[in-house]
Amino acid sequence: MNHIRTVYKRLLAFHGSQGWWPIVNESTLRSEYHLGAPRNGDDFFEISIGAILTQNIAWKNVDTALAALKIRGVLDPLSMRRLNPRTLGKIIRPTGYYNQKAKKIRNFLDFYKRYDYDHRALGRCDNQDLRKELLSVNGIGPETADSILLYALNIKTFVVDAYTRRIFTRLGILTGKEAYHEIQDLFHKRFKGSVPEYNEYHALIVAHGKDYCKKKPLCDTCCIASLCEKKY
DNA sequence: TACCAGGAGAAAA
DNA sequence: TTTTCTCATGGT
Figure 1 (cartoon, rainbow, N blue to C red):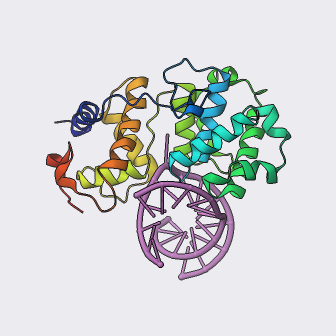
Figure 2 (figure 1 turned 90 degrees about the vertical axis):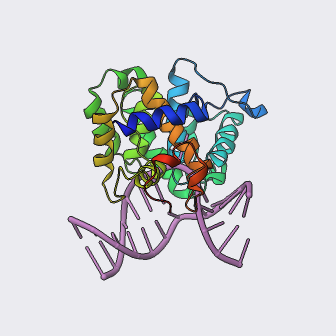
């Protein structure tokens, strides 16, 4: 029995389609999300910046910062590059670690500039080479790189995060000590899904982790509780 | 008040 | 090589 596929089905039935990645735009400024549009250059950039800003922070804070960037008209590569680090840090302050994240964004801009700020040029790269290049950018680790590949470029790669590790350790599928790439390899082998399904699975894991599989969980109430081996 | 949130990199052991 | 520390705001 492929528990990874079973968990996906249960999470989808329970939480419903998540429609990621959340894009901030004019409607978002009224606290709503615009979903499902084809990826264009603006979406690519916003998703990539969002992926950096969301490192170890709740998305709500990121949403605040992205809205602030958009209101100031600097949520595009050229405008953002013109900002000095202090100003950028001030705008993204709600996401925490703002000095570090301002540097990380600058490093990402340097990387993106090598492609003339054209996301279509990135899309023409070999996927593995592009992943390696993203990982070589200081401030972009495996989760951020894979989030950019999957959500901003629609490249099939599984995004592993802290929720993935926690949920699948409780399920008994992971020990909790696997390296990032080991967990990712497991999903690549045992979840033969499409790009939209990979997109959905990670979003569902986050949705489930936030509401039902917290550090101090009530595991007996959720949709995958019957599959869990560990109750801590 | 203490804990947690869609990590990553540097420093220490 | 593995573990620990640092970065930091905002919500509960």
